[in-house]
Image (tube, rainbow, N blue to C red; front, side, top):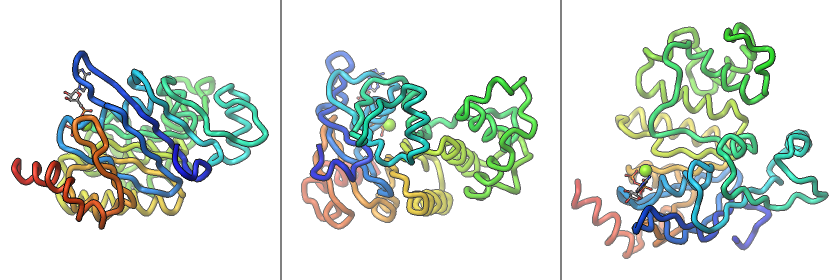
Length: 281
Ligand SMILES: Nc1ncnc2c1ncn2[C@@H]1O[C@H](COP(=O)(O)OP(=O)(O)OP(=O)(O)O)[C@@H](O)[C@H]1O
Ligand SMILES: [Mg+2]
């Protein structure tokens, strides 16, 4: 547990996950705070995606704990989640154990995720993709008869505006350029009204400009909406520019954590991670 549990949105403690004899995540601990952008970095196979999967319930950790702090929720959100039995009723919101919960239940608590492989419906329009997420989020399936129509149209448009895709709202998602698809995915993740966004290699396969533009957008959204962001990224310039806090993983373990300056100058990180990267370049 961090020194300031009340200010932590997410607290990961001693998380472990093995595949056969391989300990992919070997006791990982860290915090993410509201409005903070945290980069989880490390060479291929370091255990970053496995850590993400254990946090959002895609994988069941062998041991360890994932705590989510509902203090970040508004009273309205808390009451709704208590009614749906997603949160326990308490007078003072306590960090809530979400270890091993199903992904869709974790999403309902306000933890959104974007994937390395984009998950959009190509045959729908850009706008309809966002509307679908809003319908699911608001559990409005009863009013949904296979045709989204105008359901949550204004809200979806406003999200598309936020990510700069308003002008492409009525085009099919299948014809979007790669960078725009990533923006759509971000809009879809934001449709769930997240307090925390998990982004696994959001800029993979992007050129420098596109990457910078997506990260600049993510940064401004995180600061404006006070959302915590945990992301993985292989490009060190991007990490050093946009992360408030950096966690370095190596073979399943955290070998360093700190701000850009401290990670840049950490001799051990340079040797085992940045050094390794240079060799592969
Ligand atoms: N489902 C699985 N079954 C078996 N081994 C797995 C599985 N998923 C991951 N691994 C192994 O666990 C280790 C950590 O993988 P993980 O995908 O978490 O790394 P990563 O840091 O995300 O790497 P990358 O930067 O390449 O995405 C690797 O050795 C990988 O081969
Ligand atoms: Mg990965």
